[in-house]
Length: 144
Image: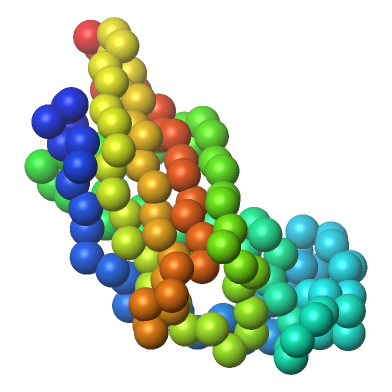
């Protein structure tokens, strides 16, 4: 079962994810954002940049390692995503190939609820950090 001793646990980086203009366009359309930067027509530099929340698509791949860790006994059906913050060094751009590495920062138990704070670092395969996505998950164990 997850507890305070799991703070500091990190998981291996995800497989590389290729950010493409098509994926950016699909995401922007799904969230209803028509900013021309997401099509490349309003972006500085070459090609489109991704909407800020696009990082959650890639971070989600790293969260899979957390859910799959049998030692933690987390059940995805009992998880509520309570908070999300993304701190950028630079925007994600079409052409970036990135990995995501998750670390558990803090675990607190309150009654039957585990509060799990974690962060995911998105970095290019060349090692340049792009952003950090910090999350709080609430896991209901059921009866305390």
